[in-house]
Length: 432
Image (tube, rainbow, N blue to C red; front, side):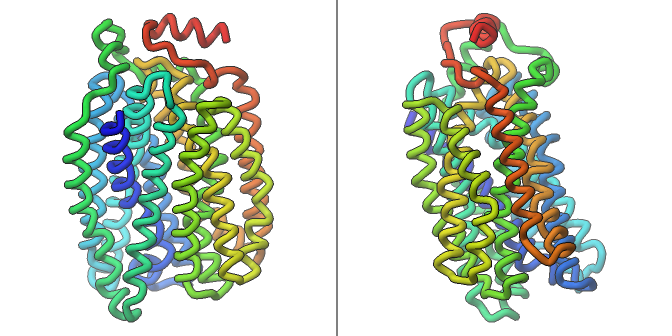
């Protein structure tokens, strides 16, 4: 189990490193290099717009990966998504800028971001299921929380690498320094592939396949459980909107609107993300004691209450209070919500449609909750000249997430039963 969890976590770290460095570059670099002909704020909006296209591609990646993950197996899809993600990331590091090839530069950037999004759409479901399905009934919360640790470590490494290269003179950073974090992906992908090659397929998938219970069209079968997909969609919209305000928009807001050095917020993000690595494991342990649903409710409530204070702390312009704001957002709110998702979401579906069901609900939500969050936030601040409309959106989406968990009832909080067939498990869920 330890080997499986380690391989899944390391691979997830690598994929999300690739995905997050784009968000950091969009906030700090791409507006100047790929959209230099427009006002800086509009350039940032366009840069975040290309970032959003990656999120638009994630549901497609979820559909394709979900189908084959439920038909062929979890392990194969984890290998494929890692290769797609690493290849696209390296190519971004080699892209000519607008000054070299004009309009083709942002077009190629857009295409590669779509490939990144497609790969990411299939990654989380496979990594989460490999972990919790190997864990069985024991310590699902703990082992599943390591997927969140992997995601956050990806953000930490991306921030550390970018922070290192921002120490270069501006001319060097804008010329070649920003490219190095993207090119480093090649080395990381080789490490990730090696580790994932040496783990076994999910035992639940193998048992389901041996019983001849694979669905011919798992995505269609999953759509019959549309209430479960909708619940996951609303929870993820709530979590993702606030997370990308913490992780991406705060970079632009603190450095661009408040006029503070970008290293302040980059350092704050690193501290906050490291805190989440610890709190995620603690929340996973708590979920094994009181249930994932209760931990989810705790996290969404914290996120709701934090919406306005988060911006008040940023607007203090104090590095210490900025770090506190991000640490509360990452460590408490997102730590609780994200850490229990592998366990909580997996319980909504039987093994033969699980990859499809959780991937579709989760990744469809990223279009609104993640991809558009920095775009919406930038537009709202540009329109209002204030942060309160963004805080209002954070609070509103958090309320939607809370309602989704409450109205889901006992679903998602029922113990898994490995010895039963999918039809028998479905019966247990309905009775609950």
